Length: 552
Image 1: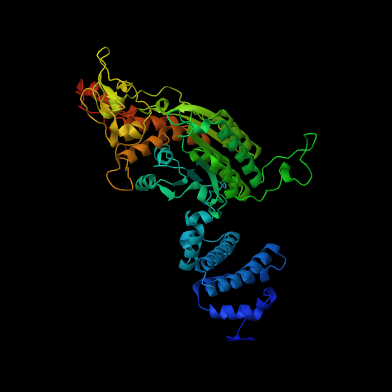
Image 2: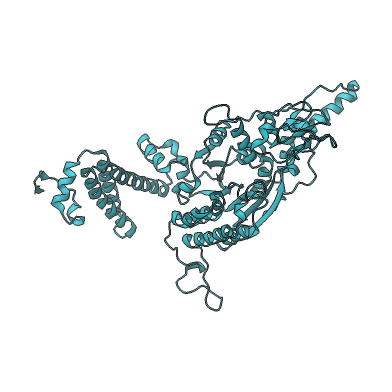
């Protein structure tokens, strides 16, 4: 008990040990008594102190308890000074540390799953897990052989869900997958399609978050406009390439995967564990900061290809594979810099391909650079189809008759010599379409003026015609929805890539069945039924169809 101007104050037992002015701090604690932020800090100090007492030789536990006690004093000062934001931040950190302690106990005791927790503990962990699923704080279920039943996958820059659709609905892989995207319209679309997605800027999230502890795969599909031939190509500037290369090195150093050798180039230098220099202590915000000088900030997002995997590996060590999708015009130096940093950190097998969606059954061209890195053996499943996929033309996809031409730049005057629209915008509809862009909503038939619909655009890029496109804002969002479709990863290509990673040799059969349903073709089983009907009853009159199939 200490006498102060405010009266007698019952001090926390530890206050005299950590305070230089116990009487003054006691008075502030009394003044702020009952304030929710201070209550939270006091509660955290209590449970962390109990944990430290139970583990007298654990220096980390002692440090956490000391910091929690000091936080009580800091929070009391903030409340007294009217600094609500500062006090709230103290409370947030206190709840986080209390949640971490609860989680630590659950894991050490092989505790219950999230659904079995009491409400208070569940809410505490849910807040701690945000924005990730609360169940990701706990280990995934395993089979009798110790294999994870539902591998956890993160998809960064997930867009409207093209990659996820390929994994879940085409490959039918049993995985626990969560996407992240900044575009609210794309997030709304992906959510409407039934996928879990976080609306956030990838660079604002913590790649060392506790919820990522058990993630085994990460997919990154950064925006391609800075590298694409159809853009301004600012990602090809020498200064841009050099800055991304430098940032990749800084990321490796920040994560503790900067290789260090002796002067002779042999074993690691003294004091460098596992051949790496110690972590530099740079935050990920500091690593990214130089990228702010880029003329096109989207180019700098390629650095996330090393920042996230390296950070996750440094914090948790569970990431087994990395997959990346980008423009086929990505500068080779950037690709090399990223893959080299991943190899040096232990993803010893890296590979890359330039793939076109048409080769996987899509009705539109979409040429992209695919990269992958693995910590284990090189995958044995072939990514390339054994036999060519059937060609679906633009006309077949949108239900037009043969012989038509479509315009990609609106209605233009006709060249009297060629009979075609001027400006290079006329293309034959009897071929797969050119790559879908944000202006695809204006593609029209040169003969009739008929404009294609969002359902047509959806099927052109490999998604069902009834895919639930959404937009955020006023109006119908016609251009916004077309832009989303233009940004997707072709779901058939995604299915093939993840099949190679997961070892699913049946991917081609699954993709062919999906393509057949998507574009209204008979499957092999249906073909067999037709042959049986012809054998029994003679020729069968074909049904009239526009080719506008649907996929369940």
